[in-house]
Image (spheres, rainbow, N blue to C red):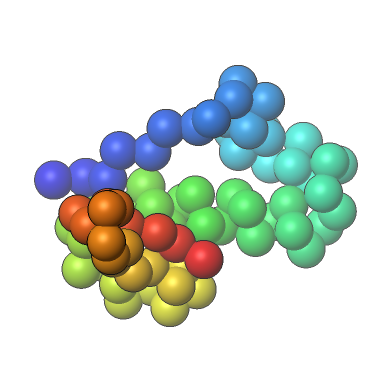
Amino acid sequence: MPVDVQFRTHRLERRYREGREAVRAWGDEAGRRYVQRVDLLLAATSVADLYAARALDFHPLRGDRAGQYRSG
């Protein structure tokens, strides 16, 4: 099952879809990295794929947030 990526704002989605917007807003390195990370999420077909992507630092949460995951 593919990973469902939801953008918090339309601006973030636009910056992903039009990579030059991300570069303009955050600079070359951060803008390109943002697009790459979202691409990585969209390409994932399972949670295991997210664990394998070390750049995401993907891990499960504990306590009252058990069953949820965090990246970064």
